Length: 443
Ligand SMILES: Cc1cc2nc3c(=O)[nH]c(=O)nc-3n(C[C@H](O)[C@H](O)[C@H](O)COP(=O)(O)OP(=O)(O)OC[C@H]3O[C@@H](n4cnc5c(N)ncnc54)[C@H](O)[C@@H]3O)c2cc1C
Image (cartoon, rainbow, N blue to C red):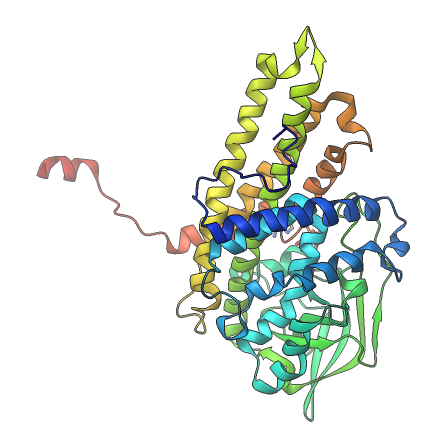
């Protein structure tokens, strides 16, 4: 094996002692990430925003390839072939890390595609499963593509912190649902940052129920985006994550049948939103570890071959310490991200009972915050190790750095996630407080 780290079939040393099945899937997904996902992501990164979603775009080739390989099925509940037998939370974490290694944007698209359909699997009735879930599971030609339409032009962080703000702040939504005979009518819009919004066929939509309500009084529904009255905005031109098309979705009196409301406007809604953020936090954490590892490997490979000061730069102490620090961050983030993924798979989805058994907000937010932060730091350090080459478009490190910067905002800013985590700590962390003098007197 050479030191490129790209030898296919290479055995990666993993602290978790991956089972043979997990090792196999890791190598398989890495091969796809290396041969398909990353090249397509670089191509998309260099295309004009509108071009990225035209017919024949590499975006669709990647999405269809991932579907044809059945990676999405691993995330389904056991009755649909996922999460059973050899598929464990580690398997899912491994898949997400390898996809994150290939591309943050395309890994994000892979995740949001699942959002409407996975929630149908857990919360939908048989009719919905027949109508949407089953065709999505078997779709390999892009006939079904999901997105998660939550944020609005005036509500980014607000929507993600519905849980903690109820008493103090009741923001009014910009997507309002009014009750009709056999369903609801949606009017308004979602933000320009909805991942895969411009290409999605179906959306998992959060909407405020009634014009007099607020974001706390919302519901979660599946909306067919071919419905009359749906309009899409242009593809945004962002700093990074250009391989994940982002754009607005407008709703002009769009009818949503009552059976498509998966979580009704009720006290359960904020609990559901909170639990959903536990799941996305654990997923994004594992993807972030993949991005960080990609940056680290670029730096490592370069340091072994770049000659300066009479030898490879890896001989210099500053480079050695930088590489160690990158390695330490990735290993610790991976351990926590996998643990969080294990936790949510056991508590948030399979164990979700209307709030009685839920995943831990403070732990999952911490996993997301830590992994996102170290991904940015590692991507930053990689450029320093690569020197000017790291700033060049010829180096993947340049793209990784831009993507890592976007990651600090995607799925909640670090600050907002931290406020959310510490809110949970302040409300729910129990410990044995004691007066030192009293304890000493009894000792
Ligand atoms: C790559 C990417 C992908 C995304 N994908 C999706 C998607 O699939 N679906 C979707 O709906 N949205 C998506 N988003 C939107 C994302 O969730 C929001 O951008 C994010 O939650 C922050 O909201 P905002 O951008 O409106 O910033 P704002 O909420 O306006 O925040 C601006 C700044 O103010 C701070 N701030 C805000 N509120 C408070 C407060 N109460 N207290 C203290 N500080 C505060 C924030 O920390 C931040 O620094 C995506 C964003 C990105 C970058």
